[in-house]
Image (cartoon, rainbow, N blue to C red; front, side):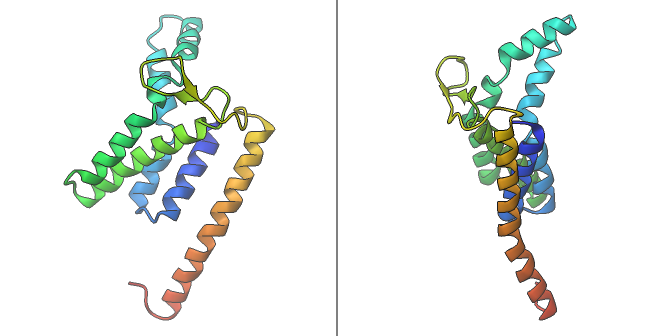
Amino acid sequence: MKWITHQTAAVGAALALHLPPVGVAAACLGAVVPDMLDQRVARLAPTPSGRQRMFNRIHRGTTHWFGWWLALFLAALALPLAPPAKALLSGLAFGGLSHVLLDMLTPQGVPWHPFSRKGRFSFKLCTTGSIGEYCFLALLLAAIWFFLRYDALALLRRVADGRVF
């Protein structure tokens, strides 16, 4: 999936789950962190062509394993952190989880366990950058709008009634 799809899904879901603003921003960042980590590692190669080969070799490996992101999310919920830190860490982990879930929709999929390139999980729904992905993104935007508009309307009613808090 393209970054725009990852970030749209993560932000929409974070808003629907009523994460605080810092959690929504962290989810937006977390939605691209798995790919950013792969890019950072690939930069260790000495030449540009070597960087691309390394990226192709490691992409959707251990950084795209569902378990790491789930463990980070559960730790964020369980650790005795101050509310802003809890929102930041849980939002980041939530974004990573959403990234991995969306990459499960592509033919390349994600690994079943963190240290193997064999055995991948994929729904093979759409290819990255394809018309299928953009149709999925359009449906995702429609769903986000549909679900969030009711929350927005409820908030406006509470404000109009003087019941903001």
